[in-house]
Amino acid sequence: MIDQHHVSSCRLCGGASLRPVILLPSMPFTDEFVTQERLGKEFVADISIVACEECGAAQNASDTEMGDYYRDYTYTVQSSPFAMRFMEGLAQGVVSRMVTRTGPPAVLEIGSGSGEQLMEFQKLGCKVVGVEPSSKLSDFANQHGVYTIQGFFGESVCAEVERQVGQIDAVVTSYTFDHIPRPVEVLKVIHSMLRDEGLLVIEVHDLDLIGKRSEFCLFEHEHYTYLNERTMADVLGRNGFEVETYSLLDDSVKRGNSLLVVARKRTNPRVSAVRVSQELAALSAIQKNVRGAIANVDAWLSVNQDKTIVAYGAGGRGVMTTAALSNCEILSYMVDKNPKAIDVFAPKTHLPVFGIEELGKRRADLVLVFSFGYMEEIVSELQSLYGYEPQQVVSVLELLLGGRT
Ligand SMILES: [Zn+2]
Figure 1 (spheres, rainbow, N blue to C red):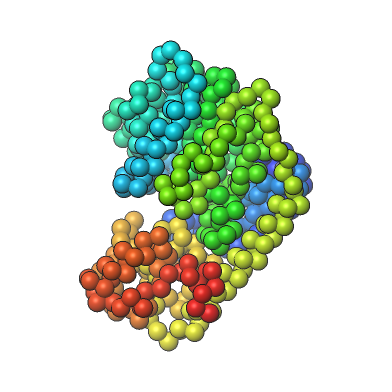
Figure 2: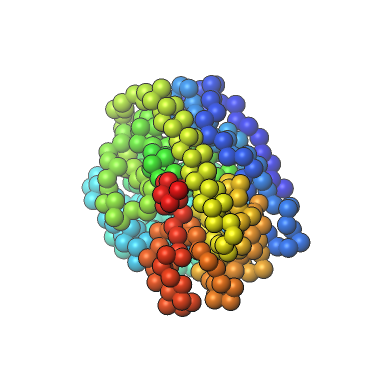
């Protein structure tokens, strides 16, 4: 059973004044695909993003209890050459910034998944320990030589981490920090475990880039905080960390909208003050863009409603973007190269999900691609496998940003 309740104070500074800034009505979870029998029983609720009038940070207005969801979570980034390059570069960059001392440095990863990132640190001679809620992923990591504590990160794991590796030189956490409902509590625990001058490396989605690309699909029930360089520096500064760089890695190595921050534990961290009015103005601009982007896709669907249109990509972006549309019933079905299950429907829209071979059996006039990062591969694959013309394949990004209307 999913339990949801509103927060009454800022997740990042405790401020009491939260202003609604972005609303996405009736949205599902990103990957709760439903069977025929469970159609209509999936979780759907408004996603309301509020901004703190004291620190300017954007955040989810509600807590959504999802303990079991993460315990059963088995999704892991497949070790593509791209992901491997990122993890290798991250480990090298972090190790080169550590304060040198005798003995191997110790690295802790929060949300360590199947342990691939920590393996890169091991290759560089570090002692490592991971914390991961999913039992399947933590079992996998332990079987592959990456010591991993199964559970959520917090005070309760400190003693065990210290027994394993002693005091910590670096804490790394990638796309996990924004899933933490009370991030300041976690920052305090990290601060207590890190040695002086130790490093904290956090990767989250960058709110500024979400805005720039109209990627409103990243506003999810599962994401509690939405930070940019300014609000990230502010919350870190208030908790004893000073930002060193946002450019540890080149943009070409990072995922699309990554905010990758390297901060150091300091006694008196320097922070530049956030201009709250500027943050609030940026958020209302995002709300306007989100409305415009959804309207653009709806308008394109409406113009093409006599055609058979298929959605390509059943990942978070496909699920959330289609769920926000008024005209999603114009879509015929959804395909994915690696569907998580067969005989299932996307949440809220109830579009049936198939493998891409369905495009060979039931011809589409137009294929609307939500996994647009792979656009070129998709176009050439659909051409060679099923004879689709390149102009039949349309990137949703182009529509979101206002092209073709
Ligand atoms: Zn605040």
